Length: 203
Image (cartoon, rainbow, N blue to C red; front, side, top):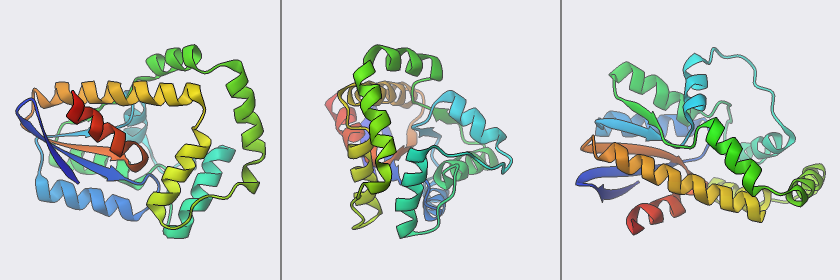
């Protein structure tokens, strides 16, 4: 976990691996120890509402999501929705800590997706999905796997540009949050955390 001063407030960035059951306890321990005045999560407003209303119903996964789960199961039990997010929602509710989603909302994401992802990239993504079963991922550890998965699955020019915009959007939202709260814990997916932290320090 990295500590950064933002607008005179203390921001702690906690990278998490989405899906691993053990990451739920990691988040719980951090929140209980730090008792931040606010928590930020790198998800959208709509995703947060979905987590709040989740009742244990089965989630249908895409081929890409199935491949992610299969790879991650090499390192422990896997559940969806990600336990790191569910535990954050549940504990913030229990402790009455403000919980703020900092990713793009669905409307903005959809608009930027249509602007940035070209037809050829969509065709390549379709071919990649069909060949996914033959793909080999780095299974050295969970961190190496999620980074390799991100690079291979989201490596197109358009999706890289979209992710860069998302990261900049999240940093802007986090800085706004830090201007209103003196102590913020930010839960962000591991594969986005390095660039996310760099952007916070740059601006």
